[in-house]
Image (cartoon, rainbow, N blue to C red; front, side, top):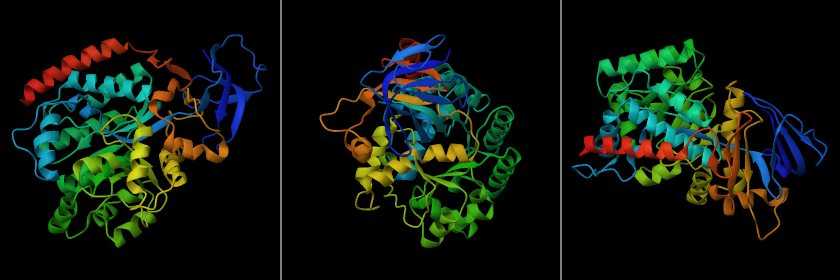
Length: 422
């Protein structure tokens, strides 16, 4: 059934115009919306939602997430405390992803989808890893997201770090999934990917008119490894294999780059995904957009599923180092929609909306919208969420799935995972 959002104020996400209107929302992938003068829309045969005093705008999207980290909150500490980024991967994240099975993946995806939806996020680009539960993992995530109503662009994080057999399984999972779904070809990072695996991955991406989703120069180890093994810095290596020529490719982090690499990216078709809170947490350095061009969007890197929180953290961290401004930050927050649209990806049409219950003590209008975005709006203001024209969150509760069941299942699977980590 189509939706009618009555008595609300519509905010155009591109030009910030405010319009008091009733909004007809067409159901289905990439459905349309139509604005009517209040009281003029036909209410017959539609689901009516009163939005009096509320603000309605395009819902949010996440440019880089990790479903597999969802059950890590409060997890047992590793036997050895990591002293650098590489050890954190070895003793924490690679230890966790090796322990995942299909049920844990399902629980992780359901919880992540629930958190995304309740935070106003209706589209997620995810980068998944489960080296000993590869086969069918992407389908499991897709089904879990579908239960909640979240659209997605998934990939499996292929890596040579666990041996040739596991790397082959990652590529086979990718091939199988892309036969029937939109998605990307995932790779972990240059320092865990040999030339053969990298070539196979690019071949797969070209076969399915897709792109490569890979961590890039997150830590200096990535550059050191590439120079020592291949004689190239990371971006030069990826360019050599054609990764940066693919308009769907997403290069995540991009912290430790030199001027030549920045020049390459400025003129490349690929995109950069910034994950500021993760960079701060891992103490790997500060992102700078200098000479990178405009293809920059935001993600959370599995830290959480709240894009409003990620936007604020990025802004406050970059005021000095990246000469950030509220307008520039908001553009990057919304740039994922341009990535999706330019690449013909489904699931982020006009009919993806968020209804904000945002009481404010000051004027709120087109001229000061970005100020409110940075200093006022929070996930707690998300009241309703519409994805592909379906009401997936109503009055801050899921409508398509049972939150209690998701939490119970997640806690059960979290306990199972933690036992294997001790």
